[in-house]
Image (cartoon, rainbow, N blue to C red; front, side, top):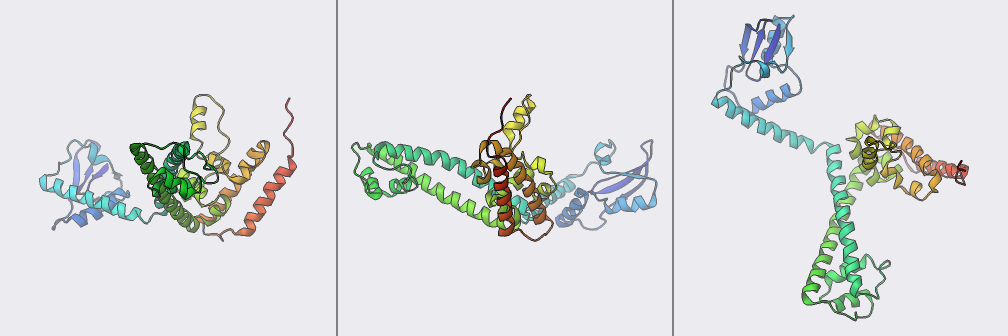
Length: 335
């Protein structure tokens, strides 16, 4: 025997498909809020009150959570029930959205993803702005004055005004009025984008510093946030082996691996750290593996409420990185 149920009723069905017993729920007035509560319980895998009663009556019967959906004799809801169900599911969805605001993994995902998207847009737009302005402002130092150029162009009334703001001679050639308007508009967009990027990254640092403080000490708050997002949450990252953490974010490498290439060895997040990127190429893999192990320990400290790491632990990690480089001062001989 099986117990089929939904939010309206529950039935005990024998092996021949006959209804042995039936309970209809809600003899009183049905409300949207009460139905939303009931749907939330069913969504969590619990039995309806009617199904629980039948399960006590027929202890040998097995509850089938999807049975009502496949039962051809299951009664269809009437118009009022359909309208009530639609309102209740809408309210339940709104509750889910409201509850998600308290999920720090989701919030960190939104912040980190927004910062990454802004960083990608800013990198392209800022490079175009500097190159475009540098075409006219040939005396500008495009390296030393790089951050000042977009602001100087955005706040000036002319290309001569931008040159004056940068402390360089007026350019030999002038852009047309339409060209200047386009350049100035682009520079204004870069300045605004810079502010949005700074805001998103500052918020990410603040949230990551409180949520994953030890991991943030090891790889920086922005890198720590990326690892949590790539893993699908702090708990999943804490339970992940260091070998898996080591290749987080290596999407292109994994795609190539599926086409027959060797598997990726390192995470771009870890490889971008100064301890790795500024080390000799022949020890980068060793240092990356070492840091992956430390990251694995650090995020477990954070997730399982351990004592957050401080400068002492980071200093020890840096000493071990230096020891790795000292053990391998020269590249290995080939052949």
